[in-house]
Length: 163
Image 1 (cartoon, one colour):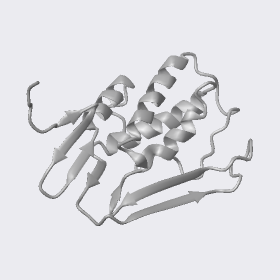
Image 2: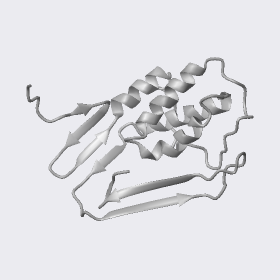
Image 3: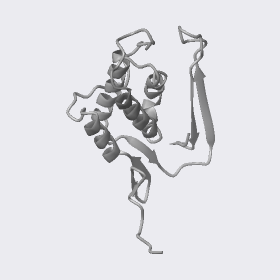
Image 4: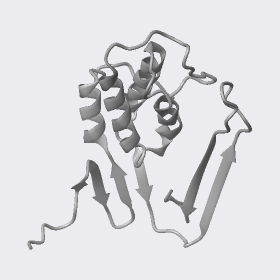
């Protein structure tokens, strides 16, 4: 076995270790995904979803090639490990993996446009206290179709997001 020194790239993640912090980004992964989806020259947007937009099964026309939608949404799911800011939007489009339409594809494209404007965003871990805190929020039966609730959580160790 050979020591190759500190890791700089692992499973699509760029690792940058300094004396004061550890930075995790997936810039190359995002650029490759944007090129695969032919969205690398798309105009960036400031949010991954349109405020108040609710996706439904009845909106839009069915897509002719389901594999492209599934491939890109699956890649976005992996990206949520380092980019929790897109987790809600990706969760919304994942609900339509088996029956997606042109409206759902537009929602995926909006997420990609958001990523195009935030290529270098990721997680930053800094030395902090060992204080564990967790936050959870949910709506009550917010889904208009099946009355399911949507929830989300985040867990911090000091000031660092860990889950």
